[in-house]
Image (cartoon, rainbow, N blue to C red; front, side, top):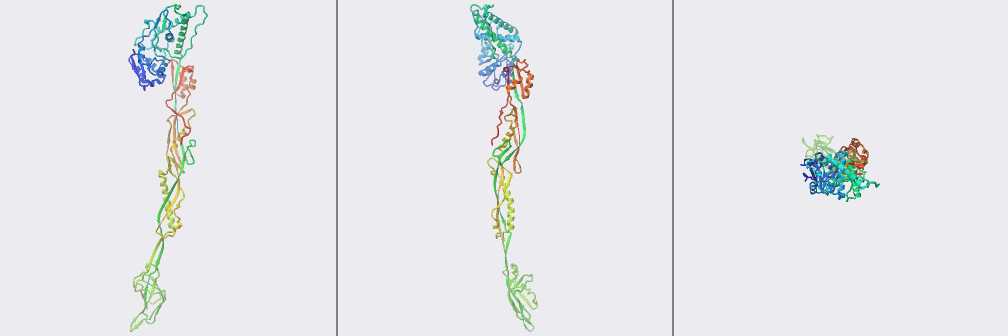
Amino acid sequence: MADGVIYLDIDDEITSAAARVRSAAGRRVAVVLPHGSRVATSRINFRLLARDAMTHEKRLSVIAADPATRALAASAGLPVFATVTEYEGSEEAPRAVATGGAGDAPDAGSAAAGAAVLGAAAAAAAADATPAAPPSGTRARKAKATKATPPEAAPPPADAAPSPTTFQQTLDDAEAAELAAAAAALQAEARTQATPVGSSAPRGEPVSPVDGPIPQTAAVTRTAGSGSSGGGARTPLLVGGLVVGLGALVLLVAAYLFLPSATIVVTPKEEAVGPIPMTIVADPAATAPDPVQGVVPAELIDVEVTATDTFPATGKRVEETAATGTVRFRNRDFTSSNTIPGGSIVSTPSGVRFRTAQTITVGRADIVGVTVFPKTASVKVTAVDKGPSGNVEPNTITVIPRGEDPIALDVLNPDATTGGTRKEFLKVTQKDIDAALAALQPALEAEFAAKLADPSIAPPGATVFPETGVLGPATPTVDPATLLDQEVETFELGLTATGTATAVNEAPVEAVAEAKLVATIDPDHQLVDGSIQVDVSPAVVTNGIVSFPATASATQVAILDPDELKALVLGQTVDQATATLEPYGEVTITTWPDWVSSIPTMEGRVQLTIDEPVQVVTPSPSPSS
């Protein structure tokens, strides 16, 4: 019965599995691997597990329901079982070398198993070597025994040290030598019986060795008796053929066990690409992203703007009327009358002038005694200056016409003068129109800037760059000539214009930068998936052209051919092979047996794999828009 059975989880790594084997109680340990176990992904894992168990004096077996897992473990030289019950049954079965009577002929299965055991033991004893990781193994089988098990073949103690061979039997030097001698004697006896004395018939040639599993536990069946006689029931031809087959198997096992092999793993070095600075330009003439030219499409959009306002009219049209009234002249000259021509000017002391409407004559004054009685005459007058200033109060027009004698003549308005008016009418002048147009231009530009800042004017997925805006010529909303001299207090005038601006969909910028980076990758390299990093800076506008500064970087690995690399190192020492392969990446070389210091010259004995811990991406020719 086994000392311990260890059940591994599907996610257990080789390190945790080895640790559990080392810490298991007893020397005989079996690990149960579930379907899909990580440990079962590589034959190297099983070899490492076997070597670690042997180093810590553990006898290791593998139990797995999955045939592929069992085959992989067997190819690493470990005993394999389909179930725990099968494993426990094999541990309880006695391991012995059975003997048969003189008339018993060994069957083909037991003969082959016995030859394998004897051949392996003989080769191990002759070479005095301890393979670190056996090349193959098969599930232990119960041997068919035709006689009782001899005492010398009794099972070893449970605490016996593990065997240096791949078998579950423990062979010390004496047992190995004994089994080697027995194999040689058995072959000599078979030759004697198969070829009668004096016969020239050729002996059976051994078959060519082939790579295959070696039985792990078997019972060797030998025929009792001694000497070269075959016994009454034994047929010489049958025994000769059997022994020839046994000899071939012995040679096969010895060749397989001691033919060296090497496992080489090359992990490509990751190489940095970049960071590469670049500038992606937005071009309105482009119809699709162009990674070669570093261009993405842009679009010129039209922006309609209008600015309108109301302006005051500053021009004037004045309408005035002159005041009218009546003045009365008085003549105190008693010697003569006084004729005052029409149009004569009379005025107020303040200077408001009036013109007489017609010529009048003021009669000579009367004198009675010493009293003079002046004569009077009245005449209509009109203010010389139009407007309300001619409206004066009564008795304020007192200044006689120039040239008249103020002693003899005076003048007076008995009533106020009236009717003097002034009316002003506003009108639009050319100056008003020019000032309005000058004020509308900044308003139009402000409206254009506001429109450019409105995201709603951009096409779907695009961004408008206001710095690229260009405002076209302005057009008045009405003909300014029709406004000139209009008698209005205010007038309305506006300007309209159509501007343009550049809109860019920034989505392809990163893709173009990535494609430019991919174009720099060496033909014999490939990018590491997910390693591309693109940093796009905010857009820069220079002379109306939009561009995007960017930097791109990635990681690449060399594309390696395992067959080419293997051809480089066949026959080299391990150190030479390591030096040869190191320029291609990190190198791990494992030889079997572990004392082998060079790479075999036979390609079939060398396994070289390229370890790619990350997936690689195939560069696309160009990004999609």
